[in-house]
Image (cartoon, rainbow over all chains, first blue to last red; front, top):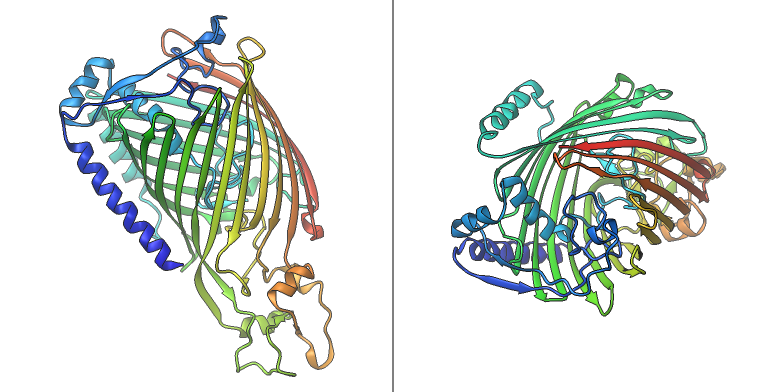
Length: 142
Length: 406
């Protein structure tokens, strides 16, 4: 069992080093074309649907328009270095630029399993109740 | 993580200095949330103690660089009936995303520390907490995204010497866009936690009779004579999820999760594994399946509803369920001759069947100034059937709240 874990950690470390080193190579242009429906958070809705006011309701529903048939996101991507200035040109400020990065990795930032993942079940209105909510938070569980 | 209290004042000054110096270079976002929860059964057991409590969270986030977020937040929970549970905490979190959106490879690094202080009635669980995590993501195909990551958490209980908890999660996952408006997400991994247990094999120092195999002592005096073993307990997790849009305004998912102990077979935990605020309450093996629905069918509103079912089997503990249900007397007083497997079958271990349902409604307002306000109402019902009377209960709770950010 421990060998599995140690091997897993080695693989993770290796990929991390590879990932960071490749991320640090400035000037590499990556053009990823995504499909027309992506659902990373599992709510059943297309994560790529525009939500310009960020209220959680897709714009096509608020504006009572027909649902977009095809929405393709194509973004030049890299990190640090020259790319920082490219992103600076695209986004108004650091908060907006970070928000775009955070949005892109949202399926990596939450997970369903693990001792501390708890039971992600409920309306989840974002109201934290650390010492009393279900699952564990701050090292305390119930 | 230190056993000592975080020097909160020093930490606060340091963080304020960081925020102050960075405010010119980056942006600051303020988040606020407040909720009131009314629950029929605050302890989630057969005591059925009613409570109404409030939780208030305020947070500041700053972005000194376009790939970095620093977050500082404070939380205050106030209980009306069980006032000892009232607590406050401070948190500092850092998130680093060095890869740009649209890049094939994504990296997420995060870490954080927090300190939580309870009312003096529960000061024994005041704790310092820290976590670090690293996750890699890779866009394998336009419709396939893979992820791999790990997280380490450490909790030091300040008031108790040598009392700590360290957990590690290792996980991998795939997200596949299906034909039409659907998605399949599969996640699997291992989780480990340190724990102490009493081995059910009796040491030679304790008198045996009839060459017993494994015994569970039913007497606390005998329990103390068995040496304590410290190990890491590992669980394997597997969880597929299918989500799909239904019409233009409703989405749904079905999630299944399987949890299997990897190296637990005969020890039993010292203490209760399921009591309120117990660090062992999340340690169980079994199955869960749930259905969740999200809908925009009412204009301006977000509606959420769900139904879930759990079959949970907990480790055997030295808690009261062992003592009260055995009545061995005479020469064999103090012991019952059972293996752990037999113990599970003969209901020495807690086995719960849980059904939960919820309904939530949110009304978000987003203003051109950047102000966001969202009042919400959540209703949740839990029906918990257990082979232990102490855990036969139901609970109905109503949560009203508001979140703001600007």
